[in-house]
Amino acid sequence: MTLRVWAGRLTALLVVGGIGWGFFLSRCQWVPAGHVGVIYSANGGLQKEVIRPRRVFVPWMSQLYVYPTMLKAAIYTNDPSQGEVRAADAVQVTTSDNANTPFDVVVWYSVRPEDVHTVFNSFRAIPIEEIQAQHIRAAVREAVNVVGPNYDAFQLMGPKRREASEKLKEQLVRLLQRKGITVQAAELAGAYPSQEITARITNRVNSLTDLKISEIRQQIAGVQRDTAVVKAQAQAKAQQLASSQTKDRSLDLLRLEADQAALEKWDGHLPPIQVKAGQTVILSPDTLSALRSGGK
Image 1 (cartoon, rainbow, N blue to C red):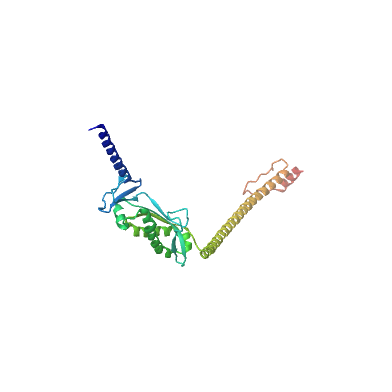
Image 2: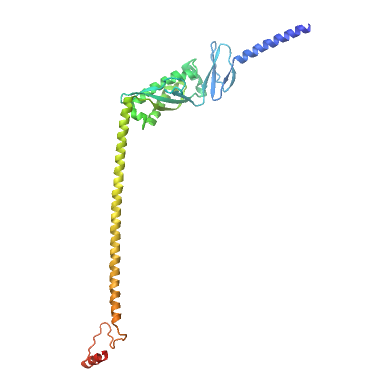
């Protein structure tokens, strides 16, 4: 066999190998991190293996379906820069005051590896993007029709929105868990009320604000009243103490003035007769005359 023949066979082998390798690479797909995959074959049906993140060969006439095990946000909004649908995609919510208001809704969900076959059997050969755009959104519409009538538009846009979001999550869990979708959280976000509803809400907010201001003013008046009473009681107590102290000082001052006057009249001699307390002294006329003459 000549060298030319060997070279031809080697070239053919390399060509066949290259074609085979190219075909293999063309049928390889990636299961990215945070996802799992499953292969569905037109001939053999759904394969049992749940494929973890890696590159996998997908046989001819087969399709790889990938589902997120990490938390994924489904955003339904009228904001064209957000969500998967670049159009008005907010969800209409009917409230107890018969108002139909579009609300942005966000649903955080994932698929557990053990639920992959359940998801596929529930939605068949539909990629997760389409499941999110159609089926999860349909579940959201059904859930808000259960939750919305329990609140009016003002409550959903303000004080009761968190509570309503928790109830929305409960309804979505009920609707989607049996289909293999695990809902972690749901939230009623921004709203797009009509002018009539906006005016109604503005009037209600103003009324509540006026009521709150009135309550605060009453509280301030009560504090000021209590402060005035305490201040008056303190002043009365201070005046009482000052009066008592002044009275005591006045009596002491009178005693000192009397003592000073007595000292000024004293001639420096002790009286010849000093009477003790309770003692009676009888003086004769001669003694009185002697005392008078001694005092001159």
